[in-house]
Image (cartoon, rainbow over all chains, first blue to last red; front, side, top):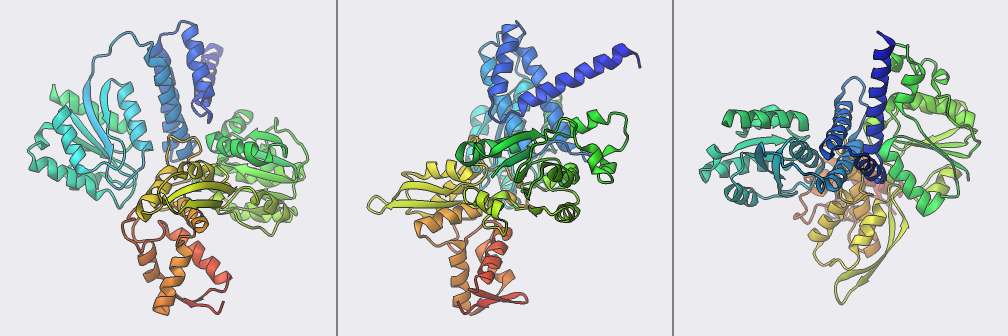
Amino acid sequence: MSNFLVLKRMSKKNEIRRLIEVLLDFKGDKIKEYCQNKLDQGMDPYDIFNELSLGLDEIGKGFEDQKFQRYFTSDLIVSGKNMKKAVEILKKYFKKTIKTRGSVVIGTVKGDVHDIGKMIFTITLESNGFKVTDLGVDVGKELFIEKVKEENPNILGMSALLTSTISHMGEVIDQLEKENLREKVKVIVGGKALTEDFAMKIGADAFGKDSIDGLRKCEKFIEAQK
Amino acid sequence: MKIYIIYRGPFGEQMINNIALKGFGDNIINLYELKPETIEDEHNNQENIWEKIWEEPEKYIPKDLPIEKCDLLLVLGIHSKLGDLIPPIAERLGVKAVLYPIDDRKMAPEAKKTVQDDLEKRGIYVEFPEPFCTLNQSDNELINEFAKKFGRPKFEIKLDKDKKIIKDVKVIRDSPGGTANSVGKKLINFPYGNRESLIKKIYDEHSNEGEGNCCKAEMDPLCPLMQEAADLLKDAIFEACGFITTKKAILKIISDTKEIKIKKLEEIIVNGPGNWNNSAKACDSTKALNLYIKELTEEGKIIKINDRLKLGKI
């Protein structure tokens, strides 16, 4: 490898590390400073966001790496929160309007108050042009149905961490059938307690094993609906 | 007491922030972030570095690690592959005790027993509280000094019995990450009349990601450390309010039944995570239940005979 390529690779590696350091800052000061410095340098806010997404993606990969897991749940929580802070800072500078690729209504099912996976998935979808309505945690089937009727989304996303709560997903899908809404909306489910088999068994259209996998599946739904 | 902290990532930073601000700021003599990347960079050309590290850990101690003599070494959230570095580092720092909490299985040293044996061989005492907020009392003086301020939550709570609200919350011992303190504050003026809503409030705030000091322990259904931490917090609050804690519930069930199988007790006391509308349910994790059974046995309040429990003589 030429010296130039080695240097280029090293500088990219260092840049990614710097991004990760910013995203993993517990106090959240570095992300504010980072965004402000880049804005002051005249960088496009979308480019800043995309750059940070690279860091977030690297943390996600490090979390999933079976051979050498480099990042942990606490890293996902903090990087997700910092990414949200970045969006808050950057969004007032967003001038262009991105054409919405599709709409998603999302929530953590009843009995479950875990937010992390859903939050990361929401950020991933939004940063990729989806309009997301986040219903929060501990969401009952009535609210899911009400929002599907009200917002007519392309996709309904449900998340659960606890094994004791995953059965509620099936109840929501059954209710969609009863109310003749099932054909109008694709259903994607995800969460640590779930498997692909379970998702298929309850009649979901897809299982998102992580936020990136979920994004790819949502993109496919939208493509197929065109 | 001089404390040296080796940590990694936001998990470690959260603990340091709380420990420094609310107790041991003047005692912390150094902080060092031990990252796998540092070691990878220093041994750039070496293949399978992570399979070799345990063979010769001294060789892999980062060159920029500052050596300063201290009494207690706190190890917070470092990668499981780096646990082997702790005994030689501890020796170089001249520590007398190591406190190495495990709040995530992936942060537990891969060869925990070897690390423990190696430290003991070097004359260094070690404890691995799992999770950190189970730390209560220690045989070691230094760890005990630390545990006076941080570890298993402990409160003093005043109730307004006319208005049936929690009037005041004083944290006697905070959880190391600061969760007891942040949840405690949110309970002031909260009504205590409805057991289910009070419990839900405690558990929700404990894992509320909007709060910087929320619990970041592992929450995998197979290793519910976060759930155990929430149980300990709930029971500390209930104890301070004079309500029925899980321990009291266990004693009542054993007293009523005279003798009970542990499995049966678990079905009554744990009974499905989050299912708080059941009044007999007292905690969310079997791990917390087992801890309470162990403590009650040690206190002589119950006796364990094979898979059964009965009341003790005390």
